[in-house]
Length: 181
Image 1 (cartoon, helix red, strand yellow):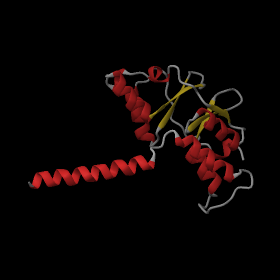
Image 2 (cartoon, helix red, strand yellow):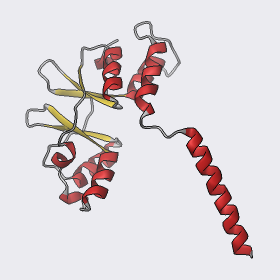
Image 3 (cartoon, helix red, strand yellow):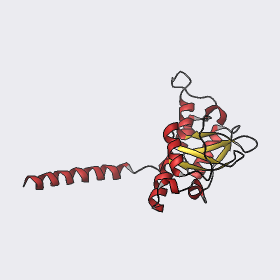
Image 4 (spheres, helix red, strand yellow):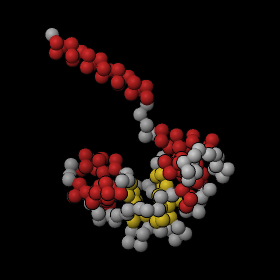
């Protein structure tokens, strides 16, 4: 199974000079969380995520219309795959780079699509009718742990969330108690 079978091809892209305000609008209008940054000849040079926008606004103390994409992608390690690579090979690159999305290029290095963890999972687990299946071309037993590992550095430890939630409940109870007193 090849990347070009599972990738998203209907992409919005931006240039390094675009403001984060413009890119956020593209995300809103395109209902997506990542916009590839490309050169004038459509070669990928970075990717801006919704999290990148939030962090840039907070760290730069500037309005989004004053921050350019080039500021965010400066020094960014770009993870790309060729559209003829196998999905497993692409997932391995995701795992090594600890990213959730990979930009997909053709033989000339031009951007042709993007493959997210969700795209890979959906493609390996369901056919066009939405029915669950086991692909005979992708080892699903290897794919799922890879996706979990890539996602692991983004996840919050559930035990910490449980502790935090119980602490908040306790604080609310104390707050309500002191309010009644």
